[in-house]
Length: 403
Image (cartoon, rainbow, N blue to C red; front, side, top):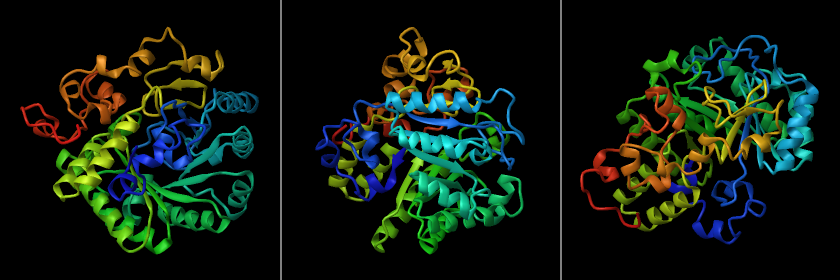
């Protein structure tokens, strides 16, 4: 996760992080990604059921609930285990999490246990009554999926009216007093809607947006032709950064992030250098180093509807264990699991241009799930990295200042 607003617009300084000692217990939520004692953020797919049929669904959601879904008692025990372990954020996802009958009780238990509860939803089931209930039990944030403007969003989501429902859900959350933001997966079809998304944020007073890079696992292969080329990715990230800065110039200060392509961090650093913002670039680079890049298997984890534990939500081909067999902390801290050990010491295992990259310390080798799916090799270079060989130092180019 790359904080465009944090890095490119300077809403966070390295000193902001350092004065807390980088201890997660002391850090405010917007600085948690820079902690040195990270407990994982856990994405929990609480159900496989969904009321939509999205082309890029990484979870291969279905119309009905899975037969092996954790029952209410097992789910409550999982929440207690996660909170007791010190998981800072539990992200309730799906499928569509609002299709799980006891999701409100689970969110409330997470909040009472000391974890921040976040909801990822398509918005169509978020009613005024349910929004007020979520606000009352302490939900921290709701992320509503919006994959472009109306025509494109409805086509991707597979339901006419999905766009209007999602925009209506934004208003519903705002009226209930819940912090709300948008989630968009970048594709060839919707890259032209980036400006429209920023326009919508300005019009509706939406304070946050996450732009996800497409990850072709789960149902993603159906969208293989929709993956942005490297040049298109560069153009999209550059536009996102420019529009963010324009909003800041207007006195608006949205939180803007990109997700699932760590090359965005070095790209922003180089963009700021090219603009003559050397001081800002060096501060951004320091923050990127503190963040450490890709965190699959240590800074983020995933629990599926059936209790399977994965290194992240996209890497469902890898099963680390199951919470029905062992509590989450036991699975997550298993010293005998060679993949977990390797993910926490990636530099020794990465191959090719990732291993040789001057930005390895700030990227962390990209998304291993993407590399494994595309090549069959966990440690191969991430094929979505759009930095050139010259930019990463493979052709004898001099190191950039501070790297």
